[in-house]
Length: 95
Image (cartoon, rainbow, N blue to C red):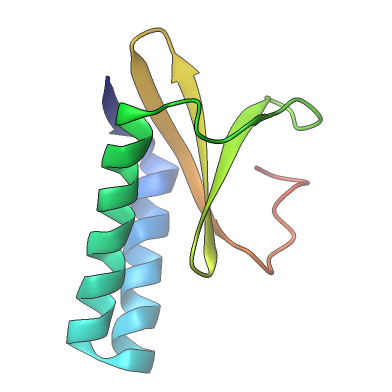
């Protein structure tokens, strides 16, 4: 399977990188973003590694990566990375 990012997910990654750069510096920010992309590859290899959260609208799968949650959909043979949200953020009202 392959993964795609929504435009919101792309903006989320940019925001995460900017915060990481300002708080931890370039090396750690790059390591964190590289880890996210490695997780996307693992999700593409094992798309059902996270359970589907049917209580959310639309139902999405949620996989944790350190301080963030990756929200994604399995669409046929593709993975759609919908959003990346901070674990402490109230994201359930607007996944």
